[in-house]
Length: 317
Image 1 (cartoon, rainbow, N blue to C red):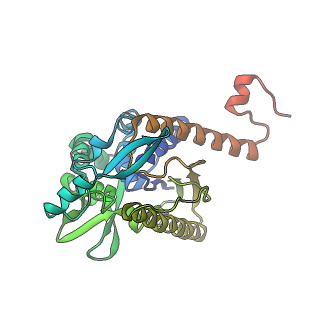
Image 2: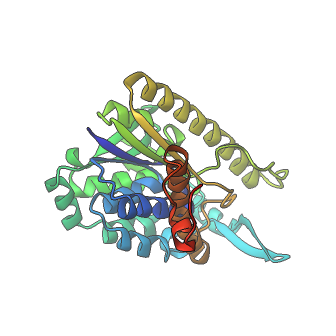
Image 3: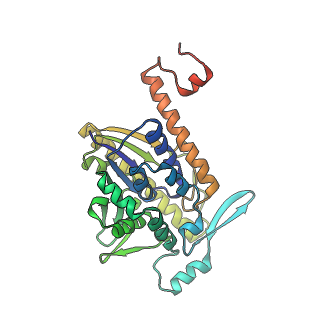
């Protein structure tokens, strides 16, 4: 029996996935053989493969815009108490004048990956026979590629993590092996089917979107906000397609598939990294996984008390 943990893309919302993973691995004592991530998920899977939950939490609850961007294309301001995101036109102009292909640069994220995903971690994962896989979109070859830690050198693996996280054209473009690579979510936002193809018989998939659409977008006010809306529209439908194909493959192969969605809309711009909000989302993910598990236990074992009922001294009827 081969168990897999799949984490979708979702930028700063990865903090929610961290909370879910913490509950599954620490409270439910789930031991996974395969860890497969896209975009922000690819940044998490190395720590999770080694059970380094505390280190991952420290990482995800202390990042900000400067941690990610070497040239930040976004300007955040408060309007009537709400955060509004717009474009830093001078920063984007600077990139164009310097012959860059994107509006912003995420070289700070590349440095962070090298610092947090160490060579020691790389060798320990390989020695433990864990398979850690990240998703990248090869724009040159027009195909999705899955990079296993067991097939890469340390430096190459760090490159693939970075490439998987790069939401172009707002972040850097990875140019490697005569190809251009971008965010894995452009092709495979929730790589459930790939986990099945790699032999998984039970999968926990954390999806950093709500199960159903919960809001209508406001009309676009400029070309940049329109571009965001178009990308968001496409990724929403890529996600739904990935999940549908994953469910069909799971049914065909008799794979147990557990899906963990966000219960509410966490943010409308996942490229804004707010430390306070991300700490809140981590806690929300943990509580959500706990409540989902208790609901399942109550459904299948009505005689079993939930943690909350035990604390209250309640009894099942």
